[in-house]
Length: 180
Image (cartoon, rainbow, N blue to C red; front, side, top):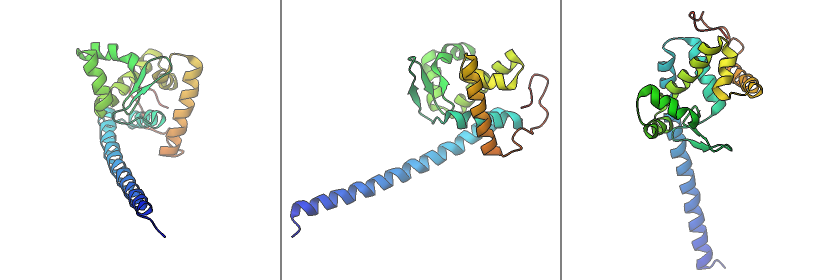
């Protein structure tokens, strides 16, 4: 015999399941919209340079962040937004854009285009400093050489998966931009 309590449990369970499915669908739709927006930001930041657009996608795929992300690291810093910009960059970025650090941090977390532009600046700064594409990819992640090498290999794998075996055949870069 089914008791009222059993019926109530069944109704609550069904409601929770339907609610969970609806929440998952809503999150998926939101996530898809964020990815579309992020793609627009990456194309805008690359300004028609295929090699730079691919690089930003490689960094994004490796970092796997999201709009609103604020991930605590073991060293007390945070990785912020879709391209997981380390919070140690906030003072430098704040000085570059002449804004308060708190505002820059909020933009890194919630504004996908600001986050992508910051990632672009960090990567291109490394490229200008070293003249080496893969070192610049590694510098984006860490100042430590062995971590840079490991990270660059991981990004290369993401580039191959996303763009295929010809991922490294981009247009000829400009004088300060090196082929990968």
